[in-house]
Length: 316
Image (cartoon, rainbow, N blue to C red; front, side, top):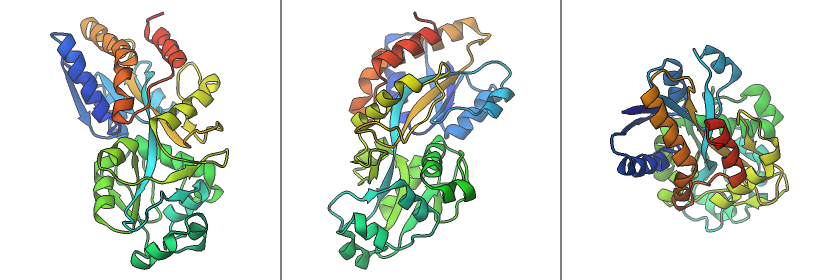
């Protein structure tokens, strides 16, 4: 039995991986708790699980708390998206990073705000029916929040100074939901609401998602393909430990709130048999497992990056 805990975002994909791997490898079973990236890191540091999972890399401070070195293994990629409940809006909502920061800071509270109407003229009519913006954010520590708040910090000096980035924040406005599931539930139920969730949850529930402006001043739809554009644009900058942000990558067609999702493991695991099984699963996920990604609204890792990770994991 291999025990893991952490990120909610990759849980649907990991569940598929566990099922397929167990089916092909008798004697190996997985127990994964989808409790959020913050919980996954904590349990890894407490050594109550064999692996953790996080949508954002561990900080230097967190790594110093580990009793032995931690390896970051990018397993898949995804997008943090802005989903909203505006039933009368037919065209996708368009947003910039600066505008989004003002909304989540509570500076912009109405759907008929001139800055929103300038990008979305169709909002004029919809805002009469649903005038107020209800911001929905995560209430638990999460890698999704870390990715989203990093994007806002890069987009808005005011956000960076007053709120900052991290897995858990003091939110200036809105209501909190636990996990991607909690935020999704509020957005589905409340007209006029908007929250940040992972792409796979929005697609599964057929929720509308905003098109975000990237550094090329293109408004980009979040898709596995636009996430791959972000990764491809960053390949030459990704360091040897793979801790790297894919937010606001300056590449044509790149979605600006993209991210790796990591499996966190101890290369120096003491239980040799379990270590062998876990690292074989990692190799399987980086090769065979990637074929499931696009079908489930995740983005497969670029081939050249997979080769680098395999070498690090132990397969030249």
